[in-house]
Amino acid sequence: MEAAVVPFPENRGPRLAVEFRELNFRYPGGRQALSSITAAIPVGCRLAIVGPSGAGKSTLLLHLNGLLPGQLPTDGTQSAVWIFDQPILPTNLASIRQRVGFVFQDPDDQLFAATVADDVAFGPRQLGCSKAEMTERVAEALAAVGLSHTLNDNPGQLSYGERKRVCLAGVLACRPELIVLDEPSSNLDPRSRRQLRSILDSLSATQIIATHDLDLVLDACDTVWVIDDGRLQAAGPTRRILSDPLLMDRHGLEVPWRLRT
Ligand code: ADP
Image (cartoon, rainbow, N blue to C red; front, side, top):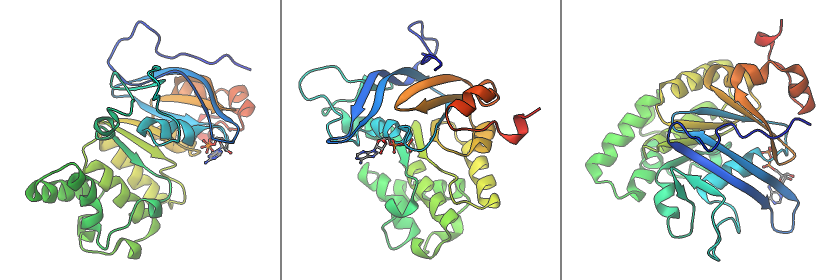
């Protein structure tokens, strides 16, 4: 097995968006989901996390928002997850969450309001924005995902792809510096996938995407981490990682058609 790689070691160049420092996680009563993850993601990176089902990708993402039971140290021990140079701790969780936008795999886990406008406004309202600013942010976010015309629609009556874009708009309306997306292209038709790619392309925030869609990775990400069995198995530039047939095969993945010679 290829040794786990620490892609951005001590001698940092740019400021870091995320650092995992020897991260281990076991679900209560369950199996070890993450083991000894030590790696960093610079600001501005577009990182893909790939690996077979059950590898630990979603669990790793959930750590970025303090969403897992027992994740946060309460006994004074150091946090294993740092966001923008701050350890995630119970005392600063709220301020860190303001900087991290999380788009879940299933839009129906995220949408709940009677209109698209209300759904997208939820985050800015939580942030304490004035009504005028909320209106401006909602309009801006819906324009960014090409859904300005759905403002007064019921999210339940939109297509699956549109609901996914409303979720993304809800996150964009909070103007996060780091956007985390879990399987953003799953169940999307080709046109919706193209729309997603161009939206992601237009965003300046640091992006972390867990996905099985290696074409999306090729188009949207500059760096890839391969996770398997809860461990970081390899990391590096997108084309180098995805064009390595032995590495791909070892972790239940396939070299995308476009990279096959
Ligand atoms: P992936 O996103 O790569 O498919 P996950 O992070 O969802 O993988 O899962 C990693 C491991 O953690 C798997 O063995 C899975 O069964 C386990 N796991 C995930 N969620 C839970 C949970 N809520 N309770 C217990 N075990 C879980």
